[in-house]
Length: 527
Image (cartoon, rainbow, N blue to C red; front, side, top):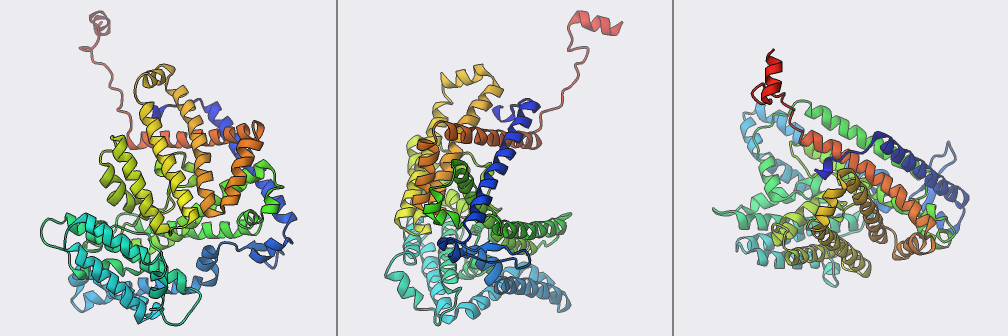
């Protein structure tokens, strides 16, 4: 019930005013730092000419964003548009040649053929043969129907793309060179391994017989997911892609169109921000960062995580739009970083998160009531995550702190759910309990930010932010930033409270009947 605990409206209005004014204030500090230092040497490397008519330069420090929406925008749109057009042409032709039912049942084969052809054209026959060889090896392992063998073989295959000299040797299968080659090679290869593992693990669960090698190829070579994800587990894709009922729900096309326009609007907003707030370039100039105010550092750290969420949401959103046109229900975009104040919900790729939860975390952790099993489950989850991201010192640090934060959060929650702590929480009331939990949520929020900016920016930048906000800025900067964060957490909790009432509305009050009333009141009502 504490999720539905309400606070006075005036108190919530105060929280909203404090939060928005503080964000605006921090934004002005970043604006000034961007405008006053545009001619610094570090800025010249990643701040390039942008809007010529307004005389503004653009922050191009993030290669991935530039690749998607500037340099290789046309190439990527051409491939995705080709997939949509090819599928639409097949759906229009099939009824005219009497193959409408066949198309509905085997459209996943059409998608797979186009995807395989696109991979062959874009990366060459050597890369296609390499991917097929990994698919064949892991399919052979799937026939054994032993999950531990699948994990050993799958993680070993993934490691060959993350460690020398195996990755260099496999790169040799791609002839020639072009700017997108590394991105497509590692994206296509690593996502292939994760999809093959999902296929093999689902085959272990299949009671009667086995899935076919064709099923694996159709699943793996679905082009929108092939290079950039997200990962949709095989059980979901197999059911959705082979569903012969292609009738759309009411207003489904409207929702798809609206989503596409929202993604386009988000791209334009990010593009505008990159012309005024150089949030990606500033953290690379440590000499400049050391002279910024505490509020500027807090705003930079927060804005970098918000940007990374927006990037993931837009990139996966564009791909998911194509998938929805194919009557699929792909993994949703990640939850906004502003809404995160618990480690259990922190992720930037919901597809990978769902994969890890299904096959590692939930499989080992079971009901998540045993503390030891929970510890083993989280350690194993972050071991796989470390291999997925690529083993290196920065990833080791990131994995350790996030694993520690998740376990600490779970242990604290369990401790406070037993007496005498649970009795104390019950005694102070739901509203006060919500306020106290929001204080811990604010601390958790900044822990999540500090643990993640070291992966997004650098270890030096994360250490500087932590030192300035926790040590040098104490108590004024520390407490003021935490109070603003507390206000934000309370607004998130209010949104969750309203959503909880929508998902689980309270039963309507039933007026008492005369039989339910005390005898004296019943007589008066009768009179």
